[in-house]
Amino acid sequence: MITGSIVALATPMEDSGAVDWAALEKLVEMHIAKGTDSIVAVGTTGESATLDTPEHLDVIAQIVKWVNGRIPVIAGTGANSTAEALYLTQQAETLGADACLLVTPYYNKPTQEGLYLHHKYIAEHAAIPQILYNVPGRTACDMLPETIERLADFDNIIGVKEATGDLVRGEDVIRRVGDRMAVYSGDDATAYELILRGAKGNISVTANVVPHEMHELCALALAGKAEEAKALNDKLMVLHNAMFVESNPIPVKWALHEMQMMGPAIRLPLTPLAEKYREPLRQALSQWNLI
Image 1 (cartoon, helix red, strand yellow):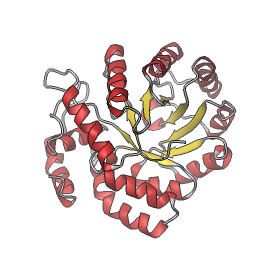
Image 2: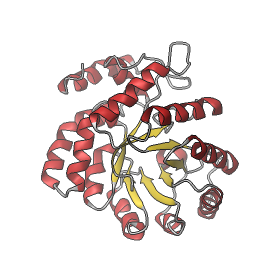
Image 3: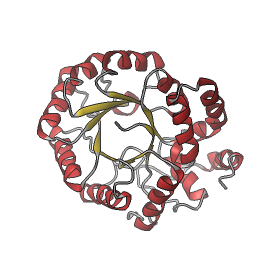
């Protein structure tokens, strides 16, 4: 089972817009050295929405190559087309990913039955372990706990990323499926609380800038050390908040630029962090001696 701090890795880009492979490899090595438990390649934070299909698969392939089995690699392979999601999932399996993360189909607003049949079809046609990803704030599509419970019947659907930030909702999902699949938080600010309630880890944006501390936070929560986890999370809140002053991954990419881990480039329609947020972000990074 994949547990702990799972970084939703940012994808560095050159000024031309091309993927910055040298910076990406540097990030991968930094995460392994700092204790990150698993990497999500080409998730939301990795700008999956703006990478074309060859780039998408190239990023997965390179991260798998560089990691070389040291920690699990989870490939983002969701799409609003079932055929496209299946293709990406099958390709990720061929490339050696350990699991796939499949966001609910976005924009076309499928019914709950449509969501069930979408994931059922992919599970039946791709053997690789699959993690469902529910983030209605981005997709205009909410996979209800009842639907997640139905999908827990598939052995290769091994987990769900619940990114609603609703702890009551998360607890309901854990109660329904926690003995059959892993539940992961997708909300940094509340992740430790959901882990204390039975979740197995956190798919994290904040881990991009403080990988060791997010690993420690998850480890404390997994060990049931509630007071210590809360104390660390309280300190991390300045970073949790800073990572979402604009749409993810705008702030985290700018933070990594400030930390000299990558350039400032980001693909349209996303834009570099607005000027008014830059100094507050620097102050947050400075509190953690990151710049």
